[in-house]
Image (tube, rainbow, N blue to C red):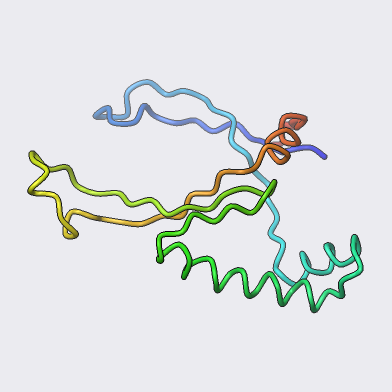
Length: 128
């Protein structure tokens, strides 16, 4: 398996007028796989029917947000960990920090060791 990349010309961020342009590799040519196709692939590797796998994955997608909003960090073994992170505006004192300073929420995913180790073996193919 190869990861496709292309070269992208990018201006220096935060510099008026763009500053110096630099060239960076960017992953490209990504394809999407939906839940049904993923369920079929997983079912071929175990004794579960694709519908059973799909049901579990669908329930997981509905439960994850509820658990995150209930202040849980979800550890899924070697798969990885999901956690909720807030971004916000700075304040000059602790007394000034309140809910109105929170500007956004995002879900962070930290892959488990097995996934990280597998990704170390990636090789790359330049396209375009």
